[in-house]
Image (cartoon, rainbow, N blue to C red; front, top):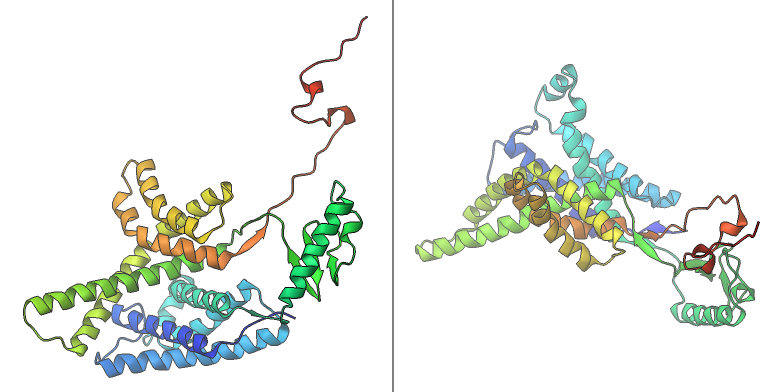
Length: 362
């Protein structure tokens, strides 16, 4: 049975990510209890407390999912949400939840933390990988070559009906009724045409994570510029000041990333469907598409959405690559069934019968 791997360091990192979100929410006043102490120790302690609690709850849920053998993306998105919401609610300012309930805004008030939790759950699932039976790579390679050779010798029938080449070869069995798939020592393989999956959960997660990484990158670049300015002015650089500047910049850039969240999601979707129509599945292709889609959409809108799309370019590039990682691959669907009324119509496009009609002398 396949299970998502247990990586405690990554779980702790996931917890710290949500702890940082709690601090950002407290600083920005997003309904949580505001921080009264902005010292470095207080901020770090708040991140650690929220992160450790999140990590503990997530670990318990993860171990339950492992025991049940559940590896679905939605399960880990739900687990991240379940971990995030109680922790966020416990940090709400006094009377905030009652006010949200009274005004009917509980769903909108909890939407952002739920999305953050779901993104963290998806990110952990993808980064932790899948534990399974150790593969016999050498044996699998030999079995596959023997299977392919035998299939070539005996031929493969049309309409998915295979010849004798799909019998047992080197302990490899062709998957029943599947052309291009075979099983070796209990593990199933597939070598048919593939395409990138379309997944709404992965799209949401990639958009949020792309925004987060974009925020961090921009803040680090701004911090470097700030340090260079201090050096030019001959002023000393104090770690405490740098941390305060970084935190403030992260919050401002984070708010801007949330503002561009919907455009980023749309741009990633446009890039994905464009690449899928061209049969492209590589990470480089998704990165280039993420870079080009914002200028292209700016031209399409005649510059009306230009400033917003420029802000969305970096998170779109990062989000497109992350989406490729999150979504994964799926087999390309086979051709649709054809309903024919006359067997004589079943001739190829270049068949002579489609170019010349039969002459009947009457």
